[in-house]
Image (cartoon, rainbow, N blue to C red; front, side, top):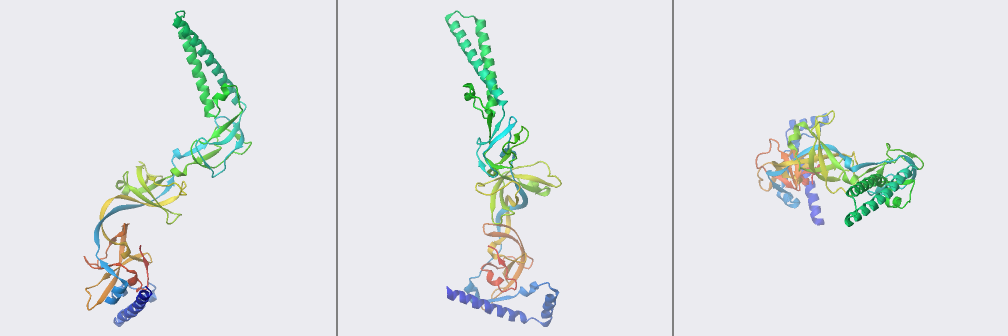
Length: 402
């Protein structure tokens, strides 16, 4: 292994020396033009890399492989920007159904809570009045039920009066409806109707989390007054976060429900998310010619995602045929992408390569869409593997695409 590495290093040095000599044989005018370009501060003329010599020994040692650009089906990708959002169903306010004094606070900002969990206690002596109303309604319904049962027994023995039976049934239904209505009010306040029916009243009632999520923006404190209009706190279910992407007018018809989406978080490089388009607004966003496309995200549990985070994404709008090369055939330098092409059929074990700038597009499954320059002929051989060796022979060593 060490011997192979030393061989590659030696070959690289030899290639650079040979390349320098090869280029140096150009006429005086060409050398003068290069010197002028350098003085102008524009870097290297691309013609400098039109004849890069290699020997068969170098080709074999580095294992340089070649191929041609091929037509291949890839997903057509639409580049977009947007933000993570929480829908109204995933946000809730904790408010009191009756004004009162905050007696206890059981949670803190950032704490996870479950739906129905008690988060605070509020005291109001007037709540006793509602409990008394329920207690009275409960007793009335009991008495009405006893009278209804008595009338039924009389009717069965033949001694009852139909009119009395009908009135008893009506009275019972009225009493039961009254008790049920008051009971629902108590249940909404978290007060046990069974305890009230036994004569156990309370002046304190709990406030419960309407949804599961994270507590935020607590505004209440012990002893403060909780009214029915002001939330004591908010709860956000960040596990249900979704994404809204901005699609411009010219691209609207390309997007449809079911399209797959790949997202990158602007402030968390390297973290990617996947999702699916499930809807689109039918109006433009304020001040833009873009509409919001709604995306359901996959596997967000455990990820630190928050409402308002900016994202960039790509929407797969369908399969399309592209001119492609293996992604590893492309090197990047100073924001530009390059490939290396074989100039002509090798003569006596000597190869000659040239560097060409290309425009790249969609990348998937190890292949990248390329728009080749006019200098590349159809079926011309292009270096597809170990291109880094040729890149190292240019002054801009480049960044190899993986």
